Length: 292
Image (cartoon, rainbow, N blue to C red):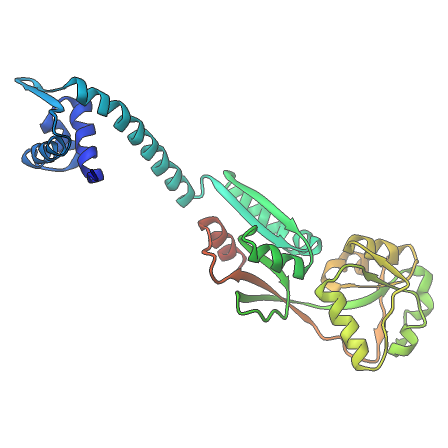
């Protein structure tokens, strides 16, 4: 037995209202259509579901049993429809984004704040990690999209470029004798270098740049966060490689200064990565729309 859901829907409203004509009004059907649907259902079970009287219809004992089950399913369907409407209207749901600590703090934070104020019912879940780690959790379906350093070449991913960042070497007051000098890479390597310790795109990019010029960039100090890169440089523990846009305050107040080099450090592009086979949630699509 495999009755159409619409038959049960007609049965539910006929039982709930006690009237075939009222059920027809609720469902925007004709009364003969409602009567036909009820008959189809009764014929499929081989038992009467309603007693007809002058005031309408009354459930039989068997009909009452069926109604007890159908009523529960209708309540669940109504709840599901309400939940789906809430998701569509961004009244509930979850937004899962992957990216580095520095990109969350210095770039994504204003967008996250604006999104949260506009859609307070959406739960925010931020997955912190390097670009390779973000790609990994994206492919596992643990985040909706990632915000990472480029370049990314992966057939499983869709990449949307967003904005450009510029990285540089910086130092604090303890290295003031270098402030007005232009250093060669060889001269720079004579100083204590501080780099991000994890396998990040920034670390790989600067290492590859030095290798192209024939040098091995081996840091004296490795740290686990961009904030520590900045703080160690401020305290005079070495020369850190950081993103210029993330230290505008320190550069303007003079607690850090940029080390000038005789070679140009290429800018890097930041992009949004989405898995091709993973459809974007309404919340993710709206957030990306806000960013662009």
